[in-house]
Image (cartoon, one colour):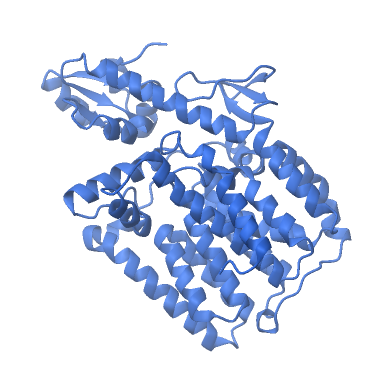
Length: 455
């Protein structure tokens, strides 16, 4: 597959530049530690269960098979780095097939986009799904319809929303090309059905339940769609470039079999669909990752050749400098010297010119793990208790398997009533008392419980 020196160089660059960042735990996300914990459970019991609904069966099975061989932070995170490098290569091939000038620089830009780069350094499924979507689109460009369907199915096995890409692909083919659509669609549905036969066999149609926490607020949503994805320098450069979309003539090539929908309109459809998916659960910038290469492809079609190099520079600059985070001694990175602080939404936010999103992510991962390790030390001196762990739950359970305590994610009124009746102390990890109020709709954890750690 890696049949060109430039493509091979991109693959190697994308892989090697992530290697130093694969050691800080499985990631800062609840879902990353949940993936590792779920892999241990499946490996030890031999019974499939989802890491979180609706299931991510291909990743869950992959990690569980690897668990008894090697489940170190580096090995699990290396899988993400490897698939991310493949995604960068696939995007480069797509750019070449569309005859985009300076394709190598546009692909390099994609590699360094903060949200995508960081997702390739921890144990999560985002870039697995995206890599197979990009391979599917490359196959579509090459008239390899069954292969495109296979890759869509594999992407869906990692993230169920990936199946939606079959629609814009079909629109690009046009309904008169019903045979290729049928070929691609039937393979995609078959592979997807096989993947989700695992959660279906365990949970029935209940596996389609999508957890939906309270809406995070529009300021948070807009932050995630802008700074959370591109970082400050690249976002500013993108905004400056927008007027050029209306002045610059699109420069691209599309093969004859994909002209039912022209490329710019196809890209708008893909981006709009992904925006709709994101807005249903707008809790993480990472949920918009599937749109990122298509936004970049749209940008490339309306840009002069000279811009490609600058986009690559700005992408790297955004990864390494001018990162944003909120100050939090339990989960937040430590601000570097020269950080600018301001208040927003009841939190102290900082912009650190000398820390980009990458270093802030590394700091958050380490601080969060330190909080969990402090919690374990404190719990070892406690009599059996009900411990409400919230977003620390999978890491705490993973690192403290022999606990004498009942470790709960969040606790309902009934669970707290039972714990109190049994004479158990109720403890909660930092910030989780109030979070339990939001998630469960009652204040008994705060009224009856105690904070495990003090500032």
